[in-house]
Length: 206
Image (tube, rainbow, N blue to C red; front, top):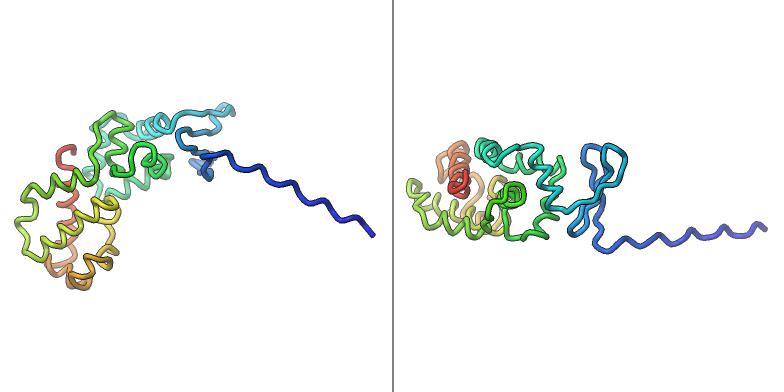
């Protein structure tokens, strides 16, 4: 009988700290703890720090801090700006692990790309709480906005912009999504209140 085929060799163990490859504009990019490796347009391997790579990527889209702040301030949803930059090669999760997980995506961008001193999400939330931002709303609506502010402090702006947040405690304990929206009058008024909250969060910068 034919001899058994040899078993394939054991795969080379991954290099410590190596992450799964991303693909940015069709180019594979490997992100390690502090370094990024990719093949340049000349076919040569390029390795640079995660911060330098992120800075270059952001600045290829926004030439100045003011240009970025304008785009951020005008965006109906901040998460759209974040998603667009993610697709173009800003690896927010990896960047947060290096710079600080307590920082919002906005502060990561301003700090790494434009050398601005970052504020943590909790610091931004505390600044909003010190101002009478929600005075025009009724008690129930103010409680909702305060809960959204705390969600921002815990997990970032994406959670605030999602309607699904209304189904998660403590928001879900304040009523059904329809009931919560009625505290503001209608859905448009609720979304406008969320935009006002976002403006207050970034007011000192934008």
